[in-house]
Amino acid sequence: MEELDPEEQFLRDARNGNLEGIRKLLMSKIKEEAKIDINCKGKSKSNHGWTPLHLACYFGHKDVVETLLKNGADANLPNNVGDTPLHKAAFHTGEKYVLLSYLFMH
Image (cartoon, rainbow, N blue to C red):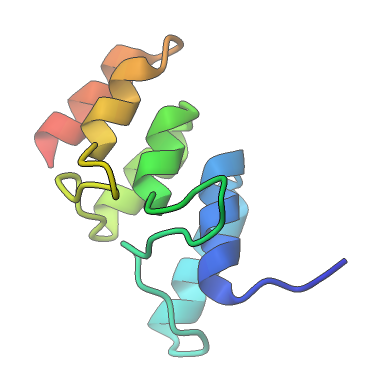
């Protein structure tokens, strides 16, 4: 299995709802063991221009959304087509209102 750079792993963990992975990478950032921009944008075809917060909102991972926001993720940062994480949360049908309320508070 190929090892991803820290930001690509961060994006993948946000997409997959891997809260433990998100926390581990954030701790690595705090300890200056890894260089990670919490608002990094994906470069692959499947996540081009999306931040970890966009991905977590779109896939309905409320714990990841909350953790990202508490650690400074920008809830108003648009992706490459102008959508914010709020737009992505509105598409999610599960706990949409919980996600939207987190975003409105930030």
